Amino acid sequence: MRLTCPICGERDRREFYYKGDAIELDRPNQDAGLAAWDDYLHNRDNSAGEIRDLWHHAAGCGAWLIVTRNTLTHAVSRCELVEKDTR
Amino acid sequence: MGYSAFKVIKEGLFGQRGWKPVWRDPDPKPKYDVVVIGGGGHGLSTAYYLAKEHGITNVAVLEKGYIGGGNVGRNTTIVRANYMLPGNSEFYSHSLKLWENMEQDLNYNTMMSQRGVMMLCHSDGQRDLFARRGNSMVNQGDDAELLTPEQVRAEAPMIDFDNVRFPIYGGLMHRRGGTARHDAVAWGYARGADQRGVDLIQNCEVTGIDIEGGVVKGVQTTRGGIRAKKVAIVVAGRSSLVAGMAGMRLPIESHVLQAFVSEGLKPIMPGVISFGMGHFYISQSDKGGLVFGGDLDFYKTYAARGNLPMKEHVMDAAMTLMPSIAKAKVLRSWGGIMDMSPDGSPIIDKTETDGLFLNCGWCYGGFKAVPGSGFSYAHLIATGNHHAPAARYRLDRFRTGVGLMDEEGTGSQHNLH
Image (cartoon, rainbow over all chains, first blue to last red; front, side, top):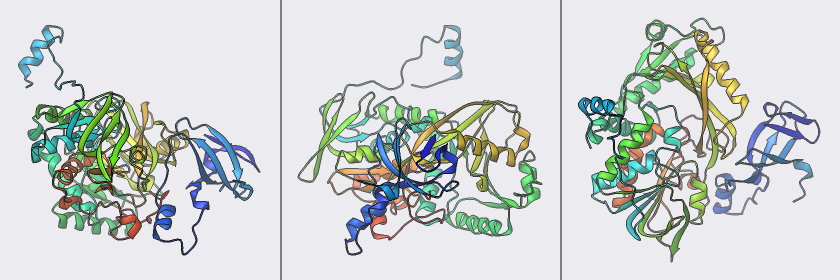
């Protein structure tokens, strides 16, 4: 698997640290309640197909990336900087 | 059906044409008392113990592929009970006792071989930890021996004792652990369940779970709707997807774990050796192949194949531990999809839907749990009460924070297990 860092270009998977679901960007408010925090911390869609995950270019530029990847084929369709996340 | 040496010789003389299927291939009935979703090791043992221990025989096991084609055929066949934390310790202890009696119980040769599982340590601190772990295993009623480096050498002379980074400081030997023939375990439970009246329905994928007013009514499948009083999900690797049909979102991520087999070699390995510092473990099959594996690839996937970096890491670990096998060729590798839970421990529980049960989150430890998981799950389904050895495998422990079982001590968080 290779990921295309928007800053560094296409790099080997070994340069990247995998964090998990991009849901981690949607941190609930402190008073959002137990259910919202449980959902945020533990529960995952875990879809078979396209998903959005957080990767860290640890052995490269140090940028956090949102990678859109297919969990059935390993095909990577998009890599964008978290700071440029435009959802 | 019985097997005998006479039958083997007779079939050998007449072209092996006399063997018959050992379980039926029934069409699904319109209604069952219990529908078990998933015909893997855990699903089959659940059905078997429902019938044997609780007399519930109007049961269907729905398998989307074929019996033995999932993770029960994609593992490294290791059986052990060397856990430390309360909750895991009593569960795997119970499961190992079932393993020890499995062949007599099923009247089927599952090739259970208690050849020993030895974990290696490489520092004083790690040896202290092993002493503590060994004591808790003994307190649980299982066996553990703390080995000196000389004793490790007597057990496994082929490993590198002089590695600069990982010198051998000793080991923790668990002699009742070992390996079993994974396919035979699936087949043995399948035959046992079938003989007791359970319908094993293959090529039958569940496409929906029917729920009315908070009560489960049955399932929709590629072979039509099936009504059921109780529905039991036990589909590790696909748990999030099946539970999603019941409107649930699980604390599970699906990851791939790779394993490897070398070409057949003369006997070199005494039992299972676990090199934890390299995330590496190895044993030798009865056919002579070295069976070994490492850690997860560490990204979510449903593709049952891994990437090259982890293959390289596993081979590195093999060379660190035992350079003597450097010239052995790798014959094949495979990947299995693991249900990873935040704390690394499984879930056997009821759900918020009446009559719907959940068994998932086995991480990379599902094979050794096959008998214990089925036994405890059947108990929960039949009686509505948690079976004592599995009573801590609650779904709500992540929400409440009470009763987390973080065996590795890394924290209860995705991406740490």
